[in-house]
Length: 563
Image 1 (cartoon, rainbow, N blue to C red):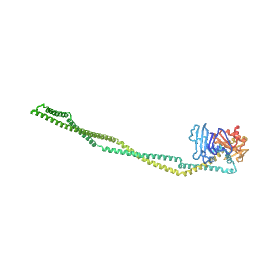
Image 2 (tube, rainbow, N blue to C red):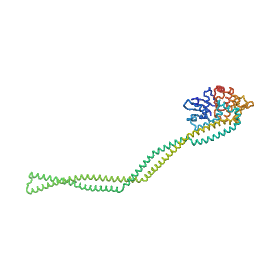
Image 3 (cartoon, one colour):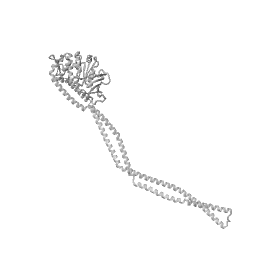
Image 4 (cartoon, rainbow, N blue to C red):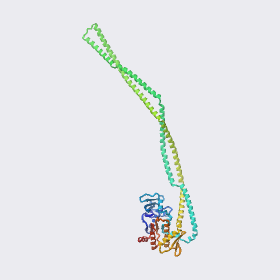
C-alpha cells in the first residue's frame, strides 16, 4: 500500500486540505499546532477507521462545522489505483473503496484489511505509527524502574491472570452477542416493517377484490335462476295454442277471401254491361216514343197504341231496372270496400300471430340453448363460490399475519433498553480486551531474540559509532553497552529515542514483513542531534517502505534535499 494523496474534508483543525505523497521518503514540516499530528492521525484513521471509543474521535471531531467528518485517500495497491473514502460520523459513517475506473469494491472493510496485510491497529500503534508522545510512553513502559523491579516477581503471575481474565471476557462477550442476536437484530426490525407493509397491501387488494367477486357471483346466480325459471315457463301447450290461433286466423282469412271473390264476380263487367244496356234502352224508347208523338209519324190507331204502350212500358221497366241495378251495384261496391278493409285486418292479425309464434319459437330455442350450457354455468357458479371462500380464508390469514408481526415488533421494541445495556456491556468488554491486546502485543513480540537482533542492527545504522546491542525481555528493554546492561531509565533522552526507534522498526518488520503499511513518524527526532538525525533518515530511506516524517524543524527536509 502506497499513499499517493490525502484529501481531508474535515478532520480536527484541517478543512479541505490536500496533501500529495509519493513512494519512499516524505517529509512534512510546519510549526507547532500547524496540523502535522492531525495529518498523521488522519492517515491512521483512514486505514483503520475511527470509533467513538477511540480517544482520537473526540480529539479530532470538528465541532465548529456541520458536514462530513472524514475525507479521501488515494492509494496504490497491487499495481492498481484506488480511492478510499471514509466518514467518521456517528450515524452516517461509511467506508467506500473505488477503483480507477469508478467501480466500487464489494466489501471495502475486508479489502482494506487485506491491503494492510491484516496488521491490527494495536500492532500498528506499537510499531509503525510513532509520535513524540509514543516515545515517552515507551520509555516509561519498557524501563526497569524500582517499582517495576519490585513488581517483576509478580508480573508473570499477573500476566497469566490477565490472560485468564481476557479469556473470561471473550467468553462473556460471545454469550452476550448470542443474546443480542436473538433480542436485537435491527435488520429483523426492518424486515418486519417490510413484511407488515406487504401483508397490509395484500389485505387491501383482497378487500377490494372481495366485493367485486361477491357481486359477480350474485349476478351469475340471479341470471341462472331467471333463465331456469323462464325456460320452465315455456312449454309445448303455449306453443300449440299460438300455432292453432295462427291457423284459425289463416282459415278465416281464406274463407273471407273466397267470399270476396264471389262478391267481385257480381260487380264485374257483365253487371256493368247489363246496366248500360238497360239504361240505353230506356232512354232510347222514351226518346222514340216522344219523337213519334210529336211528329205524328204513326197514326195512333188501336194497333199502334198497343205497340206504343208496350214499347213505353218496356222502356219504363228498363229504366226501373237500370235504377235498381245502379243501387245494387253501389251497395255491392260499398260491401267490396268493406271486404277489402276486413281482409287487410285479417291479414294483419294473421301476420301478428305468425310473428308472435315465430318469436316464441326463437325465444324457446334461445332458452333451450342456454339450458344446454347449464353444466358450464353451474361450474362457474361453484368456481366463484370457491374463490369467495378462499378469499375469505386469505383475508383472515393476512389479518392474523399482520397481528402476529405487529406483536413481534412490539416485543422487539420492548427489548430496546435490554439491547442498549447489552451493547454497552459488549463495548466495555471489547475495550478491556483491546487494552489487554494492546498491552500484550508488543510485550509478547519483544521477548523474541530475533526482535532483539533486528533492533540491534537498526541501532547500528542509526548510530554507527556504537557497538552496542539491544535486549528485549519480559517487557523490559536494556542496552548492553561497555560491558553493562543499562535500562532505558538510565539512558539519555537521545539514546533512549534511538533505542525506541530501533525496537519499533524491528517490530514493524516483524508485524508487516511485506512492508505494505506506511511508517508514520511525528516529531520523533526532536532529541536527536544533527548527525544522529542524518543517520536515522538514511536508515529510513533504505528500509524499503513508504515513510511519512512530520517535523516542526526544517533540518529533516534539508537532509533529504542534500541526499
